[in-house]
Amino acid sequence: MNDMTSAAAETFDVVVVGGGPAGATAAADLAAKGHSVLLLDKAGRIKPCGGAIPPRLIRDFRIPDELLCARISSARMIPPSGRFVDMPIDTGGYVGMVDRETFDEWLRERARLQGATRRRGSFERLTRDADGTTLVHYTPKATSGEPGEIAVRARMVIGADGARSGVARAAIPGAEKIPFVFAYHEIVRAPKTASEAYDPARCDVHYDGRFSPDFYSWVFPHGDTMSIGTGSANKGFSLRGSVGDLRMKLGLSEAATIRREGAPIPLKPLKKWDNGRDIIVVGDAAGVVAPSSGEGIYYAMACARFAADAVHEALVSGDARALAGARRTFMKAHGKVFWILGVMQWFWYRNDRLRERFVIICKDKDVQRLTWEAYMNKELARRDPMAHVRIFFKDLGHLMGLART
Image 1 (spheres, helix red, strand yellow):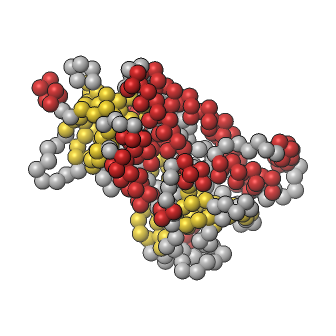
Image 2 (cartoon, rainbow, N blue to C red):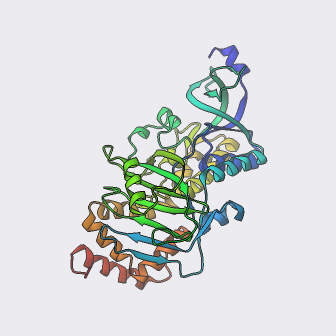
Image 3 (spheres, rainbow, N blue to C red):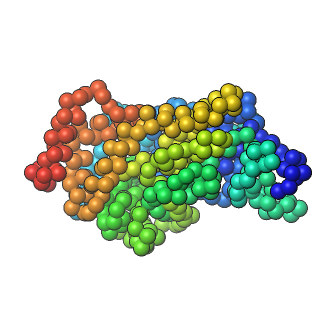
């Protein structure tokens, strides 16, 4: 791009690349603070996702009831033997379920209503203008009369463009080394009546090497539809074949398939989220998906809110060092949980024998209660220290093979 063309380019305080929960949240927050924001979203992309959102997300981000397509009151953990363990939410609470196609669009539209400019297009690259301002190049959604690649100027750029973020790879050292699980799911028409294989108020999690050698598979209700999916870091494992086998086992092979989606899911936060100048990444691009569970929506939106605050501070103060505060704040709030879940995944998901023992541990009422408290409130439960002690010794017994199965 020559100087004349770049000088004529639109200028925004912030360009957000990617319109998923992270990007839409950052755009809405920054627009609400009075900044000029461009939200650039690739047309037609829906991430494969079970769609579970905890009560804290619903509260913190003011999610209306009409976006919830189901309310979950129990989870079923299913090991290779089939001797499942049910984990009811005894507190009377629930886990909300959303369809990402509807949920993400609502978040993008909320950003627009806050003042952000929405555009459909595919991110291409980053360059710098003669004065050092970042230029974000993108190709608009194809319609007659539109140019090919165009560019806009950005005082700050937020990369919210997924696990293989082009923004991250262009600006953040080490972004290409982040570990992934590859996820695939099928949205299918839900049965009209509940059965042993399907309950509209229950999430089923299958810890079975036949369906995932190193992660898990799921059946999550979405009201009139359901998500049946699996994940694995094994590139030679057929995710689509696995979902087909799971559907056959559950008697759901004939259920109408509405859409199929696949994508990489990161399993470790990047060590650095910003370039120290004017670019920061959020959500999957920053690697904030919880190990073991694969939960990402809450963490993406929380991460984006911290990043929006950091970007606002940097814009107002002119001090780019503020950007680093987003990762520090996030890791202080959630880093310990990520570490614990990472250890759990590394140990318990290695083979079917360990998966079987892992599910047995989930029978324990202390485990169930503390798990739901931590999940729903997004913080480690500290009110009952003796429960943690009891769990420690029970886990030790399973690790040493002393506990009964």
